[in-house]
Length: 100
Image (cartoon, rainbow, N blue to C red; front, top):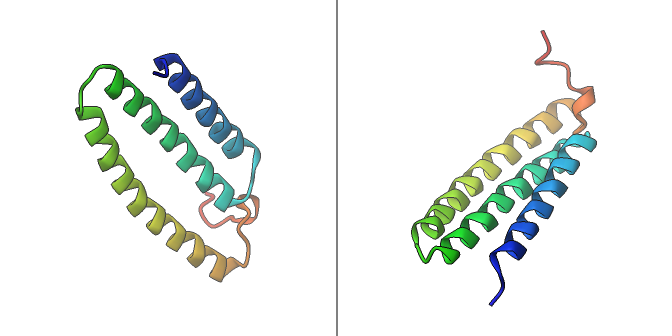
């Protein structure tokens, strides 16, 4: 049986990769994928703790989180496509509409 520490190290590594990708890239699609990586890292730790504590509530919560993430991904990609159609760019540095 795999110890809990290994799952938490995996979760921390995936979360760190997501944070690094979000902070270093300026492509909005890569930033969006990095946010999804961070969300999945939290899911890994939730499932690991749920399995370690022999409680199904954490795993049920992960199913709800995955459902909400799928809806968020579809809406986010639709917004990204709309921005690309209007501005012909997916780089965050070149979008100035929301600045005050």
